[in-house]
Amino acid sequence: MKNEWIVFLFGRVTVKVTGKGLERLLNVLMRNEIQIWNVKRHGTDTITFKISLDDAMKLRHIVRKSGCRISFLRRSGAPFLMRRMLKNSGFLIGAVIFLSIVFLLSNVIWGIEIKGAKPATEYQIRQELDKMGVKIGKFQFFVDNAEGIQRKLTNNINELTWVGVELKGTTYHLQVVEKNEPKQPKKLGPRNLVAKKKAMIVRMDIDDGQKMVEVNDFVEPGQLLVSGEIGQEEKEPELVAAKGDVWGEIWYKAHVELPLKTTFNVYSGKEKRKYYLLAGGKEIPVWGFGGHEFKDYKAEKNIHKLHFLKWDLPVSYVDKTIREQEKAIRTYTNKEAEEKAIELARNDIKSKVDEDAMFKEEKILHKDIKNGKVILDIHFKIIENIAVGQPITKEIHE
Image (cartoon, rainbow, N blue to C red; front, top):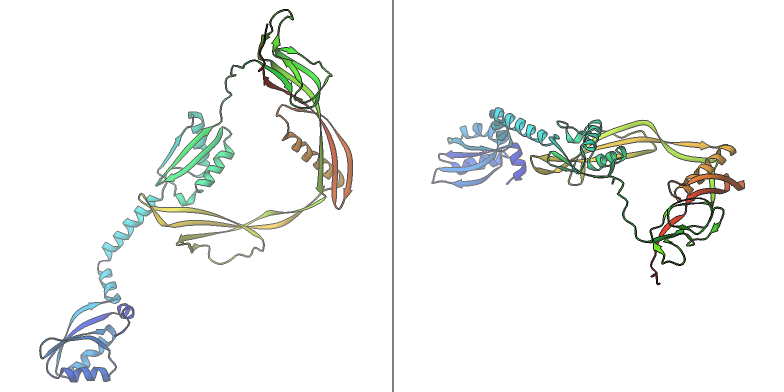
């Protein structure tokens, strides 16, 4: 018997033969290298068997000389299946078009729901979504994935602390957390103000409490600056919450080493885009065939899940962008490197002090150029509020 898959591919026919000399006919077929199988006898003068479609064409000529009669009972296999499909092509085309329309509509954005945002913030979010192309009626695989949308919204809208983006079916659901508005000052218990850093006092703006130091005094960390105990010596002190700002002059030292020549990667502006269908961990190219000529490059990939109605299909649409990179060399003169090093040192100090701290003076203590680097030791004079609250825990006795 022939391989069933090959037989199905080329077609097979079930043949009925009646008459005398059936055995002789079978021998003639074998001598002519015509393969038959599933031979069955039905009575004394009837047999049935199966034969390939190609050999069936030769069968009539051989049977005609044998005195037997043949009839074809059943035809099966790919050729006959294709014929039936072509015969019903209108229905088939209609079904394909219908499924295609349902598939496409299942991958269109039909809704955008935003929760947790004030009306003004929601308007900003929808404006930003429009700029990104995330709008009703747009195909999902032509926009960024949920992570990309989330990242861009967070970066572009200052009012947002966090935004979660989730795609459910054909609707994007956004959960928004806005930045907290300044809270109302809470009621403070009795406390002192103490120094959080070593400094020289340059200004004091006290709202409540008794000053324990004066301008130009040097203070150590933890030293009492403003007492929350006020009143006359002969009377019991009144406990209050000391309030105010005590500005101190503080010295910070920074050490910076900056190369005079730096090599880094930049995009050349050339790119190639490829599109795939991802199924079973394998990528099937759809558009953008062939390789690329970039020697140095960076690839970015966006994966979009495909849907059919409410179900996620085991197939994803992949948009891959390959961008060419090239080496760039940045060279500083000695003066430029010194200015850049001071800027880097200043930014480093800013990250260590309060936002309201003020730079008063900077002084280069040591400068050297060694091994292709500019090396600086810099002192910064900073004015910042050094007062922090410390609760009063001791008891007052008569």
